[in-house]
Image (tube, rainbow, N blue to C red):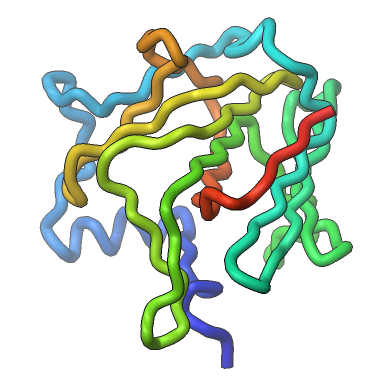
Length: 178
């Protein structure tokens, strides 16, 4: 009873089994450029303060707010929307993230009423981690290539080791950090 765009999720152990069943390699290839750079240390030590980040998705006459609140003790952002904290249905713990990606892309509603975004090319975005937020640029050469993320000067983005939330928002959406 829920539309497809609200049902896309993946769960731990099942991912490996599904990949093996389809014949996908699950081994790390040291020769492949995954275009991601990670650190165990603080990924961001400067930028704008991001104790609370609010993304308002805006498309035509519809909008939705997602709020992320940083906890300095855990180093993670808790997620809420529709006035409710999001919790893991398996254990009722808050859904939290170390890295927040906010990618802005040209988005429209197709003939079936689905929101569609153009994710080929490049666009502006924001990255929040460790209580700070900075502007980034995303780039993707084709629908079979991975995303790459850089700072405005072209320096590759370094993100913290941990889980990530990636929002693809219409370009008319707004982001506030405080």
